[in-house]
Length: 449
Image 1 (cartoon, rainbow, N blue to C red):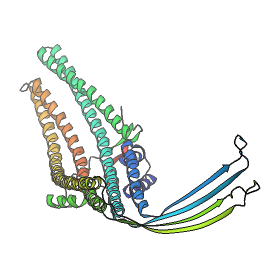
Image 2: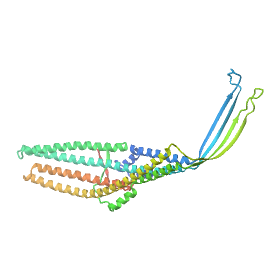
Image 3: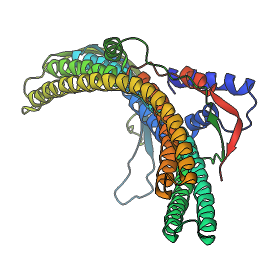
Image 4: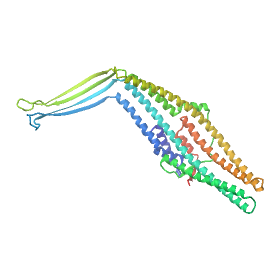
């Protein structure tokens, strides 16, 4: 796991160790996701696998030591004698050491592997940031669905009361039957919306469970006094921060440097290589057959070798040149990738900054819309009682009020998530943001139906 994960784990442990948890909050769920999310665990395994390329590249530059051994038995005798006696044994071993002295191709390959390892670490950190966004999105989608269900239930109850009142008034002849039908239609629609909201909430809980691997029937809710403010600084300052801190862009730059080093390696394939080889030999050889038919005595021989080897590549069927051209194209492709990522980062940063400020304005306006819708409904209900308004006006006004309530809830959660996305695109998103956001969750749990 990278440094980002280690920091996250430490912060989460400190938080959960000092705060009694009555329900699942954002921190506890993120802690579970860091350990159980299949996407992040897959990314970790892939990162660890790619890290071995660094060891493989280093191995070419380090000494290569090999030990060889052999034993041989030779038998002889008159033709037709299958006893294989008498016979003689020979055995020995050899210790070889090879050290590259000059191999520019291997050196540049190793430098490329180091840069790829740095790119991999940055990419893995980006996956950790992405997990924060996925967990926060799933968590607040649950809260969004809970608010929508609560609003739908309130709307259904209000529609049911209106339907009952309308039916009673029709029974005593105060209104026409058409108003009963209109009230019943409004109630049926509200009931249908409640059924859909219940299913949406269940799906939201399932999406959260898919990340952590555990159900979360109780989650804490966002406090009403959660501050909604404009993003600090200017669009230009956030864009500049994104161009310097966006993890995807940093990883792309490291990959470009890695491809440039790989190109140097492929160009160096044309250069000579120099290596030093040393060896130690120990051989024990049995003597041959003596005049009396017996075996002569055996002897042991030790020897050492030391050689300087130079290899000058002359022609390899065009393969060396082809690999160099491929590396050149890889550099061009990665340069375009950096350019594309830079443009995308610029666009994402500007859009994210505008969305946060737009969300802040929308939250304020939708809060005012609730007040206006509530006042309009009360006035229309009074008009309906005195006969200056009809039931359709009442139903429409009530529907507008509940639409305003849903819109306000959506705007708050959009603001929270867009704030996190702004920090993600600029590379500033960290576990501390989750800890701070977690402080604005209600201590009393809200229970799923």
